[in-house]
Length: 124
Image 1 (spheres, rainbow, N blue to C red):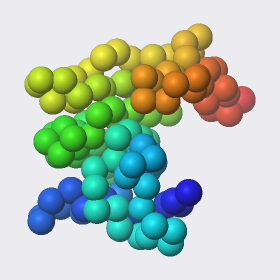
Image 2 (image 1 turned 180 degrees about the vertical axis):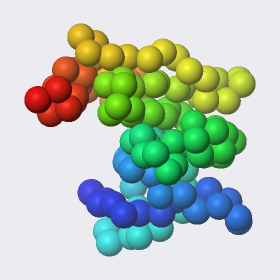
Image 3 (image 1 turned 90 degrees about the vertical axis):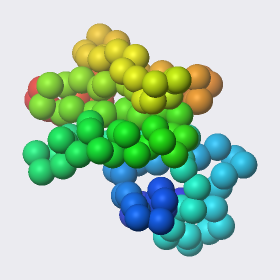
Image 4 (image 1 turned 180 degrees about the horizontal axis):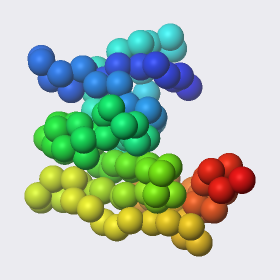
C-alpha cells in the first residue's frame, strides 16, 4: 500500500500530487516510494478554492494525455462528484453524481460508495 503524499511524474515537465491516486496491481510501486513513475489508473481531486480551476482544466488534460483512465472531481461545496472517463477525446465527463447516488467504477469491481455517506458530515 502506498500512502500520500506521493508525487506522480506525468512527463519531463510536470509532477502532480493528486488528493488520491489508485493503480492496478501491475503498477504498484515498491514500499516507501514517494514518486510514482507511471500514470495512475484512477485519480481523485477534491475541490479547493485555490486549485479547482487547475483540477478541472490543465490537470484533467494532463491526466488524459498520460493515460489516467478515470478522474473523480469531488466538490464538497456542491455535495457532488464529477466522474470523468478516458475516451477518444480525453477524460470526458460521464456524469455528475449527488446525494442518493453511489460512486462506482469498472476499475474497482464490487466498490460502491453512497454519496450520502461521503457528504454526511457536511450536512451535520
